[in-house]
Length: 61
Image 1 (cartoon, one colour):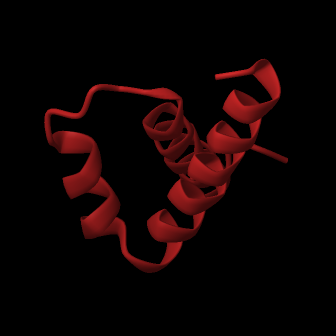
Image 2 (tube, helix red, strand yellow; image 1 turned 45 degrees about the horizontal axis):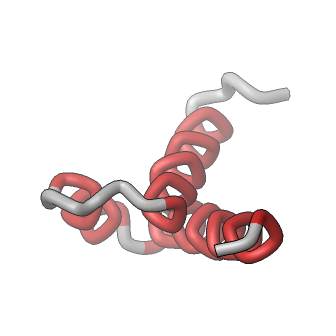
């Protein structure tokens, strides 16, 4: 996969992880707790969730 394709996949995962954390937190937790192969998409989901939680907890101004 090219660098550009990886970046697009990561961004989709990040945005999905952020949105799911906001609307379906239990689902995103389930996704991240399973034994995935931790590809770039799943890394994006994890980072999107992390960003959402930082914003909700007031860590980001």
